[in-house]
Length: 334
Image (cartoon, rainbow, N blue to C red; front, side):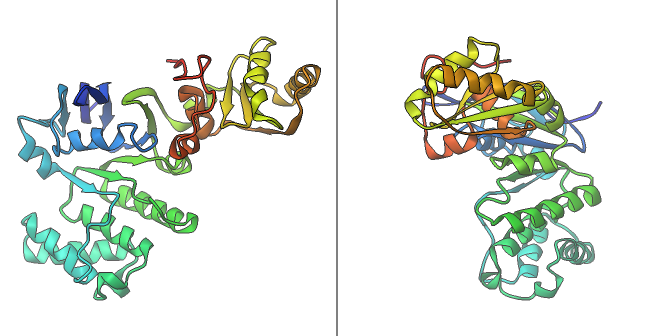
């Protein structure tokens, strides 16, 4: 198998803190690969090393067969990067932004113009191509920025939070453009995101990164199936009961019990409908009032919760809660 990206225990430290720690990945050519994790988990630092914007502290990586340190200039010729922050020139038109990018990469005039027209059509911006970028909506800016990343025919494209801050409908439209561009261009895409539904919808495989380490990696369906058939969530009336309810469930037949935020406990089970009465009886017998109970099939949010002890929403809001048995960092399941 031909790999677009291979890393060997790649590590990046800032001072004494490892932002990325001993990450080993092999991403085949043509794969749409997702990196899941909250802000600060190490996603962007890993992308920065793979795109030669910062050197590893230890370990190494090859991108399109080139070493990211020794062959940095060849790596840059092989990749495109779409940053989470908009980096377009709003004083120029959409077409002019693409034109400048094509010239910087040395595309010949006729080839460059044809390429720009094709990409404008692919991201549905032909009718606004000659409007100033400062008049574009947020969704249009994202689409143009993604198109710009494809102008020079990269072998690998890094998309760093490409839909950050967009409303759900616009995000879904961007997803479709990414899928079309991937199919049309045949490039390898590495997508960093903390929108779990985005990774589930788009990615061939995903890796969950937490505290700079890869804690799980597989296809979205395989990761979800590892949890079992169902997820039961019990919402308590008093957050102080979370620790007691969790210990009670763990000691009475429920093996995969985790706190969901500060007011609920979730457990991955098989035959969830049959297990709900048992869970409710345990709570009732211990005098723990339950506000609500829900049952659903595992989603990537449940996978993330299972491997890290917290949901992405918890991490983004800084909720610490009592997520692990010790009340600090949870025990990981490899």
